[in-house]
Image (cartoon, rainbow, N blue to C red):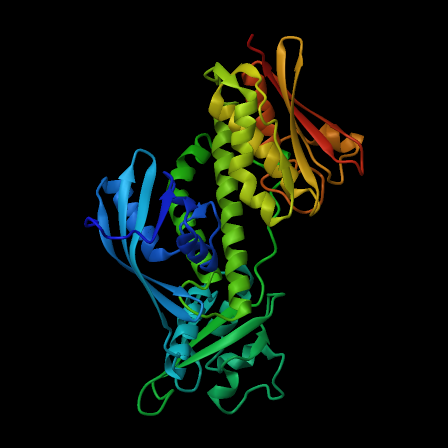
Amino acid sequence: MVLAGTAVLARARTDGADRMVEADELLAGLQRRCGGDMPGTVAVPQLLEVVRKSRNLGLRLARTIEALDGDEIVRAWIEVLPGDDGCLVEVINWSATPRPPETDHEAAARRIAIDRDMADLTARLDPEQRPLTVEVNAPDLAEFERALQQGGGQPWTASVTFTDLAERRPAHWRLLDGARCRVPGSSRDWTVTLVPLGRPEPGSAGFELLLVADAPLPEVQLAPPEQASLPPGFGRELTPVLRQPIARIIANAETIRARLAGPLADEYSDYAADIATAGQHLLSMIEDLSDLEVVEAEGFTTAPDSIDLADVARRAVGILGVRARAKDITLITPDGQHQPAIGEFRRVLQVLLNLVGNAINYSPAGSAVTLSLGRDGERALVTVGDEGPGLSPEQQGRVFEKFERLGRGSEGGSGLGLYISRRLARAMGGDLTVESVPGSGARFTLAVPASD
């Protein structure tokens, strides 16, 4: 508890999703330097842990936290007070000291730990570097795994091609550690980590072999609609099972990407960013499969209520504002306007998030995405317009089909977003339409029943 007369150095507020939504500069600056956004999920791991505990338990908590702030270590005494929707964070004491230099041993241990987390192949080798056990986590390593298992007592190096070493089988393991190679069955380049085992002579008890890919696997395309077949209830059963582990993968990858645990080479940070992006993509696809089953279920209905389309549009823009700023895109909302309508709030918000998210994805940097209101007879309208490449007449005819990925390049998600959005719009007594001229952007219009 803060004693009377004790100065509060800084305050911040978090919401129900543990996002820092407002903060004094002391905390806001640390949030940004630790790789976070404003607003955005609390980026300091120890602070995030206290905030989550306080919110979940409904208890006021106080403790010391530490954070790596560039070349300094910040130590702060903080108090977290839970509220109706989020927490109040107060900083009572704050100190920053230079971070002690990392020893060679610490740097090597950290590199090996990161490589273990990222490795797609882990093998145990004997002192002659012959494979004893092999474990792979990538489909393009299956052929290499078989080659190692059927190697007839040959060292693992007999099955690879080194791209930066003159000798096929270097005499000493130190020449292999950090080398790059190509393996049978994979089009990717791989970086080798060899961890010597045994003392006092390194390698006397064998080695641990780690292979880390220099690039992620190419994105797997979904099967065409006529080939896609899932058992009933698959999405609804799969979503809760996979959501937590995938979210943990994303969180860990973001921690690595933001260098929250210490300095990190750029290539590892970039690789972690790829992992986080792929995780988000996978999670959104799973959510889409669950929604697909819901909207296609017999007897699916929505829960209509009185809503303000303008307010829902502003909420969608608020949620996606950070993504838009990251791409230097301006979101223009119908400020000060109102558009009474009848619809299910969360479903209308879901549709607008999809439309605005697509507009951000396909708009060039420096452009604008505009949300405008209108009315057509008994229908209230909200239109999302972008300045992207637009759609041809043939693409406009296919854009709402299942598994159609907009037809605008290789980007995009599952190809279900617009299909689901139109189903939701029609279930609410409205519709979702598109107008576009190639080279002049696209305008998607959501129509729902108007309310006088």
